[in-house]
Length: 82
Image 1 (cartoon, rainbow, N blue to C red):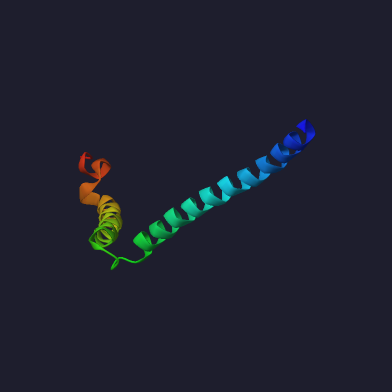
Image 2: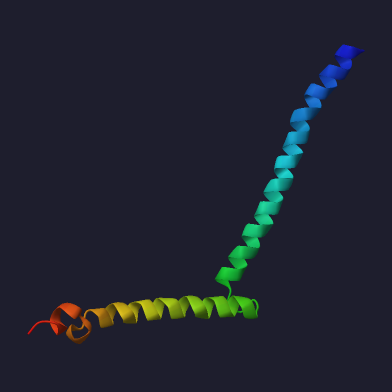
């Protein structure tokens, strides 16, 4: 009797662990799927559109500020020379 109980417990543990891993994977898959849709499809909802516009604005501001830094009138090493 004891052997049967121990044997059934040993067999049940990997099966239960497998179920838990599958449930965790499904949850992670759903999260990744929603995140992918949010970032990839700006017309999905207003938040997605706002995030997309904000991302593009950060890229544009960064590019413009980098270009402005190269101009001599905004470079301190040129301004302070006499």
